[in-house]
Amino acid sequence: MPLIGKASPQDYNLHPSQYPWARELYDQAIANTWYPHEISLKEDLEDWANMTEDEKHAVEFILSFFNPAELIVNRVLALGVYPYLKSAECHLYLAKQMWEEANHCVAFEYVLETLPVDREQVYQTHLELPAMQAKEAFINRTMQRMTDDRYDINTPDGQRDFIRNLVAYNIVMEGIWFYSGFMVTLSFRQRNILRNFGSMIQWVLRDESLHLKFGIQLILTLLEENPDLVTPEFASEIEALVIEGVELESNYNRALFPNGILGLNADYVNQYVQYVADRRLEELGLTPHYHATNPAKWMSTATDVFELVNFFESQNTSYEVNARAYDQSNDSGNVRDSAK
Ligand code: MN
Ligand code: FE
Image 1 (tube, rainbow, N blue to C red):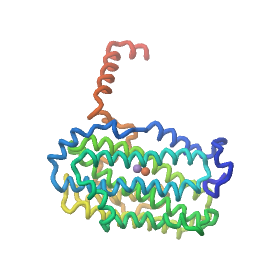
Image 2: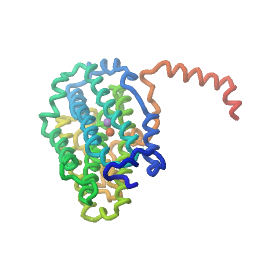
Image 3: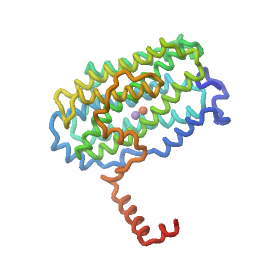
Image 4: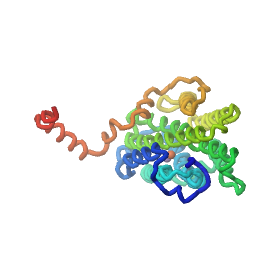
């Protein structure tokens, strides 16, 4: 059965499995499940009182974009991706991803309810600020073709539209724009500020890294199954979409940083954006465009490490007590000796 096409009764059979990678990503996603209330923001609230106006602006700005962006991803998945995928394993994975995007939205809502911010203004910003509107318009442009009455998934052009849409919401939005926001928010934790919000972002990042793996796998599988789609023209079109996404993000970051904060400024973050964009181009089998070096080396540990080292460090004391008790039982010799 091909990966995409019109729906048929066979689409609901999980076996025989043709796309085991999608089932593996589903299992991994289930293992990564987390809930916003596991994180206490009490210390972050204390940090907030000591932050500069520019620092607060940066957090509010990023939440203004991220909160609706989570639901925009879900709309794209529901209307532009799920209906055209025929694989039952992919349907399982997308159901979990959609819950995760809802969970991210609610997690950011929890942050907005906890910090003393002007929530009305935060919700309003993405509707008014040109740099955010331009990003949303970019997503809507490729998405619109997927909901057009004349859309046909079984034509080469329909299949190219499906891939264009994947590149926009997955490679550009989830794979570049979100990483830019993660880098800025995790910079606070690097300075020992907003550490619990940082843990939350790290959980979101772990989810998004799976969303990205899924999207890339979809694109590569589609190109493998439909080699006629692979032309130099289409490759440069994909590259152009990525470059356009980088330009939109660069403008957005200039509005995000009217002045620098925490040793960051728009140029620094935009160099990271270019570095990430090059990695995405490579992951798609294209050549890097920017040849930018990573200005935030510490981000590679934040993104490459799947299991988090300091996950519970700042909030879950009972976990630490249990861990210590376990270490002591090890030191008494029983567990370690019997394992030898
Ligand atoms: Mn998300
Ligand atoms: Fe996502």
